[in-house]
Image (cartoon, rainbow, N blue to C red; front, side, top):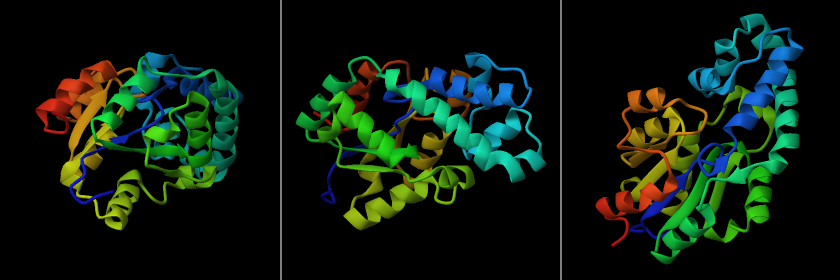
Length: 228
């Protein structure tokens, strides 16, 4: 990445990949397994946050369960999700939009709390791997449970390695976490609805923009000087 390059940082799950309902179903499988009542998508969007143990706490799991059973339970949730995710699709027009922004000179990378291998496999499956310079994500379930290296730190280290300037970046995500990362790094933040966080949560985080569809990105990129 050149020091003066403009770039987009994309969250993956819920942002480019339309899979919020699949995550809800995976978590419901654990709720049922532990004799709890499953939740609907609207409620899930009010409690799903990262680090992942906070989501379980929001869903009524005790501190003892979180401390002693979370790695096993979340591993089962991930297995449930992985089986269902083969049917997951990208949000509308994603391949064409990604190609358009590469043609307009933007670098694009993925910053995720999901797993590198799973994301890379999906990128190949959807035929969009060539549009991304890097996938910054996790390697195993335990890393996700503990939240050892947060997304913002992964991005900071990557930009330091590449010589990229945070002020030249724009981040797009479906949770407050991406808004917080943007604020900490001095980047433009775009929050997209329809993922794992409710619109009310997203607006409360005060992103620079809230959108409902990725087709709304082009005028934002133009307004911020990322494209002409």
